[in-house]
Length: 487
Image (cartoon, rainbow, N blue to C red; front, side, top):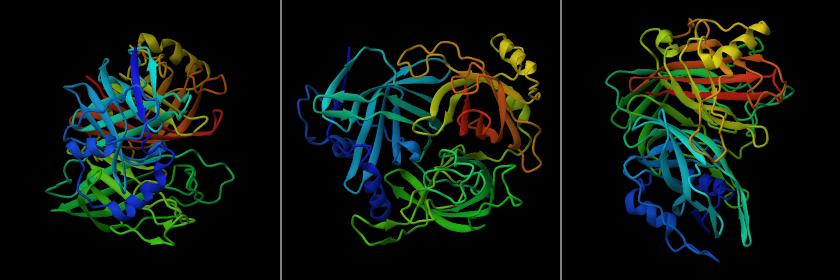
């Protein structure tokens, strides 16, 4: 049996207000690593009826920056692949708080199970059978990570541990980007839940494909700590343009920033200063975007949040939670991309109808034995993916706190379509095909929906990042599919 220890630290529910203050007052403070993390996160917690509190080990120097997504707050992850441990840390004006930490259980094909042994938020000790992964991660060590935590809520005699259910990309942020010549990046939005069909404005809670950025590109130049973002291009989701392809809240085409030390490592903050009016319980805070670019080019942006009406985030690249991107390939990467094998996540944001599923895709051949039934089902419904398609699906034991994961299903096809004329690696006419057996299929029939995707390489491995708009299935959803090539 394994004990999960908890202590009365900042809860996930109370973190956003402190996060807003951090963005105003804390940016530029030294990066808190080593003993500072352990001391700030676990020093003298107030506890009641706690049989034991396990202090997480000090994380290594390499830090991964993670945008807020639906966890509610920006954070860092530290993975120690030699000790097989992980630590997630959030930050407020008072310092660092380790919110969840535990063991890494290596699985297969680049996937690792996350077994939390420490959760901050409520007093108490939980006992559960082991092994019991309650989250998964896919990592290109030192370059990129995709992380999901799915810890169920538990009611104790002296309180309740709220569920942890979030997905986030993560990028190393121990150094600032440094380019000898300008580097072009392609990106897609990390969506919030899909806005309703009747929505006519931009909201903090949703992503509206009729009004907000779906995909784009940017050229990044660096000189020391100075960063120049140039030729910023933002585009609405294809088919939702209403006669114009530009978002209703366009970013400037060029802007300057700097990369500096912060709680989250060496990151780029946009803008450099934040305005606060009416400090106190009813303060208004303008949003700040936070961007980190890894050594091999993974770009991750947190778009920030705001209390200012009509200005729910700082619009510089993506909308929704922010954006994820990679370097623009110098040549057409399609053949390499569809020929690779991937591990990653199929996601749909939303508190009640969303999902985050660890999944496997590839290779491109539709003759895979596990895909025969799926291909036949699509054909019977007159659905015909192109040759530029990667087949795959979710692992059957997803979220079952069980290991190993088993063999992934084949009930999703990612069709990149023809290489776009926009840019190498940009696919603006992609399509996602969903099989009847997919657990998120709400209409009991195969169907498809449009998507945009960017693809290329990170540290010599192929990657696909996709944004889809599903108004055929039930309920209507925004989808994100994030895949990293596995060995």
